[in-house]
Length: 440
Ligand SMILES: Cc1ncc(COP(=O)(O)O)c(C=O)c1O
Image (cartoon, rainbow, N blue to C red):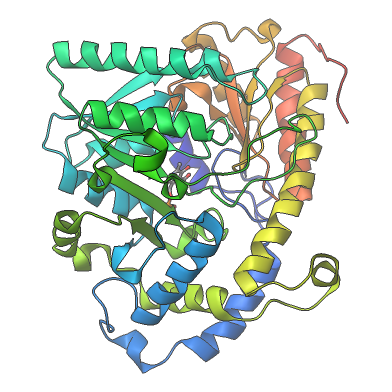
């Protein structure tokens, strides 16, 4: 972690060219120019006196919550339409998920989840809450496959790990999914979601789906049959599972950080449609998690302002609001940025695990680079950092084997080029200059 903080205190910028290029944190600046201009203009229209008060609602304002429910109904296609009363908003997923875990768990209880997984869960689920993460190794089932996963084998591993955890004295209370996933960047199939639901019902678990990358999906020519995003909310649980299912256990999370490229605004949404007790518990955290009125006003603008007029609109028809145009345009830029970085990484001899969602590319470093041990990975990561670029090593995501790097590709092209130049300088030297064909 200390290198992450070192990077933040010395980030590359045109004024600090010797700073560290950040290709390791999941931020998306492909839309930054348009977004900054939009926010600057719109704040003048949407921020008023109410923004200086605690507002008209416990969490986000009534107008934003209403607009948000409309937006989520359009894009997440829930089986039961989302009503504003189903929504709790918070100041970022980090905080919201931490409070949700606090409401659901007692200290020492377990959260079972597929691994590799997003490193932030280590903090969100354990700090203050005292939860214990119970990872189920899935790398071999997911990597290298073209999207299809052996569902039976997945669930077998979950059963085994849950029993093992309980033998060790950790009672599992929550199943935590990330859809689309981080760090591998793929969507979950409906079949997989249903299998997870059955598992949750069988073991009486809460089922949380972190869908923060839901709309950050893009076309990848190597995954022509990639599955579109399906929200857990879309499933007609009792009918599709063919039996009784306690819907109080289902909680879905989204936020502004990823799909609206606005990590700094700290706004997140929890949708829980049947659990009034949970809503009461979350209400008691109201002011701990309330989003700032500035973020509230900006989200309101995204969800209600008209889309810009221009070439993209005329090709695809009209968009209902600025946010819809934004998502569409962002996905196209992501596709192009991904292809560029994939080409460079393959030329440098890395194996790219194909993905179609999220801000990152999960790779395996060439065997010749000497990353077969965790010490080797740490040493290699240190050398890359010393060359002026931060790329996230696989150990942070609880990869089962050493030798992975996660690259963020959603950065402007010149920064991508600079970071990759710095990376290649070290990597090609340590892997004895080996390159593979297949780049572009
Ligand atoms: C899967 C996942 N969940 C949550 C977050 C954090 O979201 P927020 O910025 O809203 O705290 C991230 C950030 O990288 C993430 O990858």
